[in-house]
Length: 325
Image (cartoon, rainbow, N blue to C red; front, top):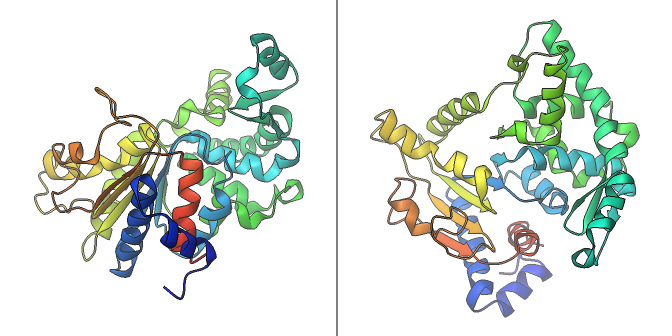
């Protein structure tokens, strides 16, 4: 493939077997979906924003290779935190050797650890908090309601954070998503730090929970979006990690078909999961793709891939292939 860059050509030359081959197969099939005119949902679990996936995902969004995102509240906010506080992050390569006392020292110094990376609470959370509260409060006072991601879109597009930028904004996937206004669903947003902060304001009587639209509203929105976007083409599902970010959106197909009796609902047209979760009993993250056939999520003929590896390694490589890097 002459239009591919050096990274892609290296993969094509050397990734011939096992998980390496699955990676290439999944990337090639993803590209085939786009060439057919199909759209793609990407789900983000784990700490992919803190792993700086935005360095490749942002360009995927700009080039219309991602059309909708499902992510945890943590991934939603942590990309913005990296955007405004990157220089204060602390990397700890020997994190496996930390004692409980060393972990406590990190807490006392305002660092929240995510594997080998510590997020600086004061510079990250608090820098965003005062600005996002003003947006929440304005909605509260004007009796408006928005989805959690829409509030962050408003914040990013307002320009209020620009003076804090500490990375090239081209590497922020949330900023790219806001500029293109692509849809995002964020199941379980209240589980995130900003969700906790929002709840604290509600407890103090400064906000009302209704200011933030709920997970049920996200699901009804997703159902409408899925129906509208599968009239002529399919929608693929590219799942990074497991958990609620993946399980929530994939269920929209059986909900439409079984609970709403929409017999003509199309199955997801492609499925790939990157996971280091071993196949196990009762685990969603460890379930092989074929199990989803029995739940009415995938068809027998749906192209299915599972790459059992570290998503922080694999996802950028898949995206590099699609971006011709």
